[in-house]
Image (cartoon, rainbow, N blue to C red; front, side):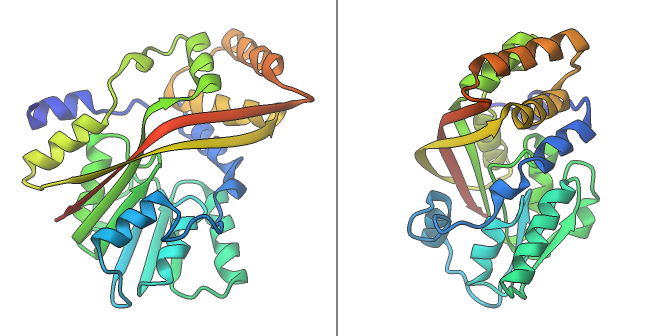
Length: 267
């Protein structure tokens, strides 16, 4: 097993263009609203939470990287209050509009970049802190900050062994060396074990599909890529040409196959 110092070294985050990354998530905010499928009988993550913790009305919940609040809103049905944090203004706006239209009184949203915000604002204040398939928790420091926000339980869910043909090809075009890095789930598990916890895992194969116009796809993929590495004009041109080449009737169809790995641990 790796030591904490080695985990910190291996599990870091390099950010090139935060504003481009935020803009990419802004562009897809409407895709992250609560849907009927996000329920405690069908959704793998919510089923896992329901199995491990009895949610009740005196609980305070923190949703790290909440997006437009799909999980915040569903969990709020069984708990006292949910606070969702996200760095995307558009995600927050969509979430606030949703709770207002649906008269949900126990969900609030905060615009925060989890990687740079002061963890003391959240430390130890929540019965459950969780993060579901979000870029908010993708390195040691952001993971530790989420753990420290809870005083009872934590959950995290990550796509592992992910096959994302379009974005994988885009990263190859850009020469993204980070594609060779290891999956961070082993690092996450080792960190929890070394902190003295006994994490429990659940695995669910899932397929995600989305359709975007070529212009929407350019903003989505390029924004994500620019958040990871520098992208010069020639590479950007190649990527736009590639997206046009895989489009059908000006639509880019995305299919992602992954194993959704969810982790639970009492703190």
